Image (tube, rainbow, N blue to C red; front, side):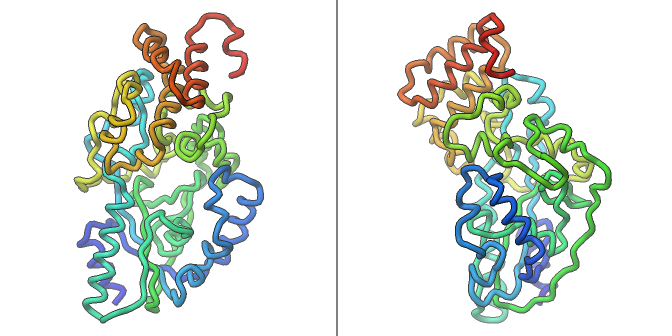
Length: 352
């Protein structure tokens, strides 16, 4: 049965399928210590639901096994991250968010896989997840043999790097678990050294409150000033730790049409993206994961990037056009950005 499930999964477009048991006792203390230290910031959902996150059978009663899938997402025709970071007048958006919302893509395929099993053996208990519930995705993927959790806390695979999504099917089927793989990070610390905000505080330890992905996506309020300069032109997420990882030389481009980049998101001019009103923002991000941050935070993030962009009349005019925006959050970041283009050391004192 396990072999057949894996064949069906690969036929549905998953790049790897593994099976884990539900014993996450090894990971539970690490999660609790991370939460107790407040390193999850405003992501209060990480602390909700008690121990259901580390006990799959409490989240979905009668769960005995977890089918874990991997789907590569790196689009072949996307602008390389390195090129975007060298072009501060353009927006750098995390590669996973350039196409269709991965939640929808994976959930549909996982449901199809479960239904194929149901057609074969009859009704059985299951529930599908894609970054959508209290699920310890990376530990389950590690136990299912899909890779190991690297020093940057992302999952790494020797044949595929880290540019991939994960999804799960909790099931009451008793399936044979795959063997986990060993850690192959060795003495490498490139991800730690490259992090613009030093969010990877030690190997395998992430302070989410410093991470640019958290700051641009999860944080609802003002971005702390010490982190604004290091953000550069990253307006949604950050891929630096993946960009420098040696294992990503083995990453394969995705053949999935849904993950192909939208041109205006792949390498758009900051001034153009900043000009979108809410209606245009919603239209341009329809079906995209980016829509979840809303127009206000979209403008907040781009204002910071414009503050870090080379000074030009276009940049100054774009920022000034939002000085009377109804949102205090937007106005605050616009005013900060304009100060970055005003000569004089006193204007940069807050960033030092």
